[in-house]
Image (tube, rainbow, N blue to C red; front, side, top):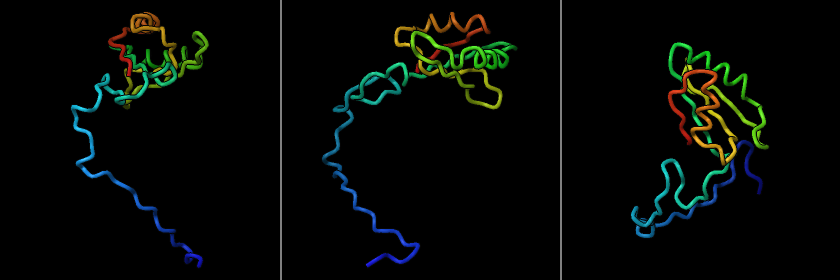
Length: 122
């Protein structure tokens, strides 16, 4: 028999494990903050770097960083640069940095645009 118009088919039941079968926190492998325990390390395409600017020109630095670096090639990776959170962003989020680029390299790269307050790899 066909279901009536507008009705949904029944959902399959989910099999939940009893609490007694869940691992204790001490049994879960430790991982860096923000990482999923047991997951492989993030690749360049999965890494997100936040560059925060400071000073009166921070919002201008964000605009210039997006205009200057978004879509640029770096060691075979195409950088994706986005405005950071907030109505008046003071940071940019960058995806696709090559794996061998470190925090000092990133800070130096963006220092020509504005005063870099911090660089955080997420």
